[in-house]
Length: 87
Image (tube, rainbow, N blue to C red):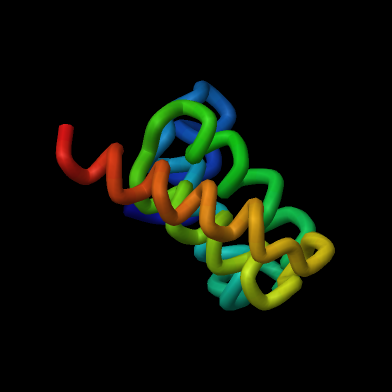
């Protein structure tokens, strides 16, 4: 899927596209690398129940990428990721 399509679906609220757009911002794929924007998209995806979004948000909290480092929030989101994967 192209970046334009990912952005379109992310802005329409598709959790998988939100996560994908977060990954694009995290790695600078087609957009300027921006960990804060990555966090915004991972958070939207995670709150919508997307396991990958929750995993990426946990990773961000664990290493302080785009958000302040917070081990407790990292653990919470890793647990959410695990729950979402079992659905």
